[in-house]
Image (cartoon, rainbow, N blue to C red; front, side, top):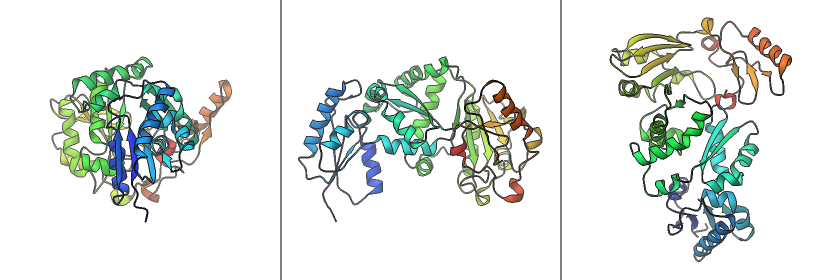
Length: 379
């Protein structure tokens, strides 16, 4: 077995997250980390300067007898990786491709937001990598040069007014583009469970994002919580309690037998009312039955595709992220819309509406007829 260590370098301390992940994946490996804190951040440097710094960082690490190097710096990975690989006789890997694969797998609507340094965004490396992974993915890139120094200083905790103010400023372009509401998928409020589910994510990042969105003026934010027996039923009261003090709508969604969803993990929406008997009816919004804690600032919604089939009142069709119309989420039928316009587009949409089935058959068959998983369908 090759006992030589693996080298990892970044412009500062952020690359220690890569070290943590490497230790989880390869606990028996020795790792040498170098953080160039004297010259952080790299994101506002010219490519020639970046390459100079990266070669110096690599030269220092190569003074140890390494078997491979991980470039944990996104800016160097996007601007200098190929040059470093061409000059090296040991494997050198960056962070772009792994990040892209993970983001593409997690995206439910095939739209990805990229917050990165100015140099990373300008390089176009992430967009090219996403296109190679899935040409239908839409990528919205936003240079965020102030985030790096704040994160390096540990100013990334929920409630930190500085990071929330900066994040709110970066979210402003979304508001200006007409986005005024956010839907956030969050199935647990426990950091350990969140890390287990996402494998690399941190709950505090999501909570910080929610705070920043509120500071940026986003209202009516919805938290979508998939009810899963054996996983998060014990957190129902905690999710409901969020609506007591926050103007959010927490929507509990019954697990559908699509993708990895199984009957064994199904939990009916009635579990929410049983766990929180103080909830009072607050009307209906679309396919959701709404409830409210007396005196609470937010709302609780129940979406019940299985225990209370709402197909008869459903007036929705779905356009997938790759430009196909599904008359019903659980129908395998898809009508191509991409490239159509004018009368041809109107005919295709009418065809999709006319093909909408009376109801789904999830309860009878035990599985969805969608033909694809949710992260592939999006929409």
